[in-house]
Image 1 (cartoon, rainbow, N blue to C red):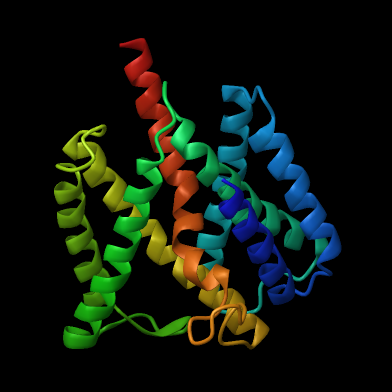
Image 2 (cartoon, helix red, strand yellow; image 1 turned 90 degrees about the horizontal axis):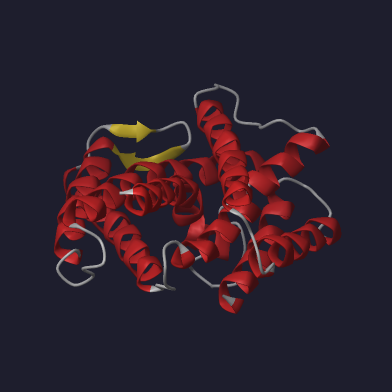
Length: 243
């Protein structure tokens, strides 16, 4: 949890630079949110639902912005802070809350999600490099192809089924749905971060990992997918509880 808290602070710093916000207030807001919504002893289901819906509202707006021809995002300060909360801070809080869904703490959920993210990224690259001919979203990310996207999604589905034999706390269908959400929204998250970087005129969000960019570059897929996953898992937990 401390590690993800550190990642959140670094990512907030990187994202603030991308959208031209002074870093002091965003980092203070991130720390406050971390304490209030994660370490607070009694966060209710209503609070979690509010956080999830707030993140989903921002996510849907960012998806819609992908299809707007102009690259430059909204530049007013309020929009920047809304994106900071909904795109970065709240998803990190939900990511840290995910293992606590249900009766017992289960960090293997996070491990499984990351395995599927890596599977999707790896096979999207391999299939795209080998067979890619049709661009997925050339205006935002010239190297991504439709073939790579489909290949990544297919292998993620296969990986989800295989994972269900090792992490048996979820049924195979639940893992397959997890893989589907990861494949779809993880790819969208990568495209959205690419749009922010193109509007800022930079190749990477940061330089913390030479050759690999910043923490946001590494975690853009998972932080965009996590609000959708968190809602999915909460629905499953609610249905399981009342059944």
